[in-house]
Length: 358
Image (cartoon, rainbow, N blue to C red; front, side, top):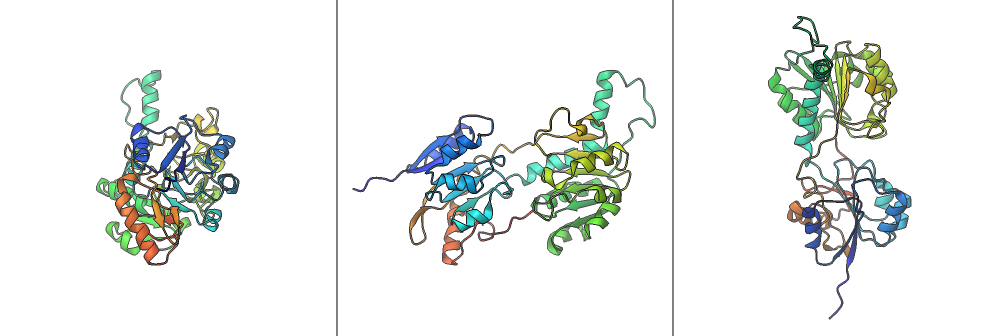
């Protein structure tokens, strides 16, 4: 009998027992984990990934050429505990024939709910009100004190009408929003029809919206998209919410827009860096509310590597992904092989795609 070849899987963060159990069910996997809740140092990541067949990483782990070189030729699959993949050197990964698993849809509802909560908290000035209660600033009822901005009959602009953008619009529609605008790489008439959303240019969206929610992917085209010019076009009463990536926003320009009263307020789920230093200028503003990224309880179960042997001319660890979706993942990989595809990113709904979607 031939000895069983164990495939090494390296996990870059401490994960709950359920995740370890899912990995343990793959009898041909030998799992090594960075046993900490804090990000793994680069040197330790290089050491841990050396010789690994599979890598389970987080958004905070930059997997670049240096890490791939350290991993060596064994590395066949990377699964990331995230929807975005901007921390992965996709071009280099594709050159090496490495499969990538990510988690589309897993956080759609969670992120949309957080976006709406940030928008409502910011436009109704709840952090300011809570602080006034704590410091004694609330003396009596005043007709014009801490008045905010309402969604009824408003125009909401969404930058990126992808899964999350649509989920946000769906949740905001019952508040009586009069008009939805969106911008992106191209019109999405089928998705927009549900909200009667209008496709406009980015400057038009900035100028016409009462509320702006940024929900796009981070790409070279969107990096720094929300800058001085963008904020200058916004209404003085407009509220800005970012739940995409910190680098989509020029934070110096955002600070100036908020401090000068050029725009009314901002709610931020993401910043650069994360977390912001406690002395960051944005944290001195009453009309800016950086939030904490919240994650769905089921995220890990749907992200953990379930390494299996795949055959595409040779045995390799090709399936990454999502223990809870392992059958659909296997079907997707089978589809890719049958169609002669070589996907760099796979998701079970559209199994063959090399483009990150917002």
